Image 1 (tube, rainbow, N blue to C red):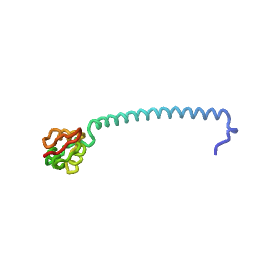
Image 2: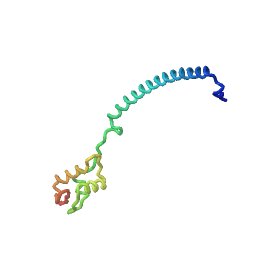
Image 3: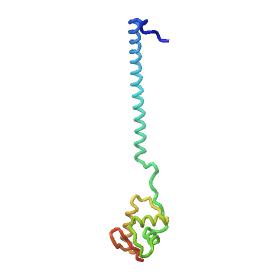
Image 4: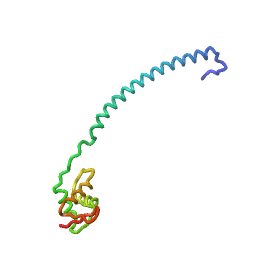
Length: 131
């Protein structure tokens, strides 16, 4: 049980304050040491993560091998006289099993539709299979 403050002398209160002040200095020094240690550890972590950020986590993308070219896959996916957009054509081709890891597959389909003689541009963003 704690003593009543009325029964404690001023000298005893001063000694207790000095004891706590001395203890506070020790705690401050300990905190500074721990902060230095924490900074050292964080530096090691930062050094390890910067190396990992340079490499992709999943490794390099592997190009899938398809049994036919994109033009052939488009011709197989579309019926003759069918009119589709490049986005629709890319969905048809992928639904038929054409594999890709391309980030801009719709652009690749659009280029193939524009260059392949089996397709004819009928309007902006619309291609028809002619043969």
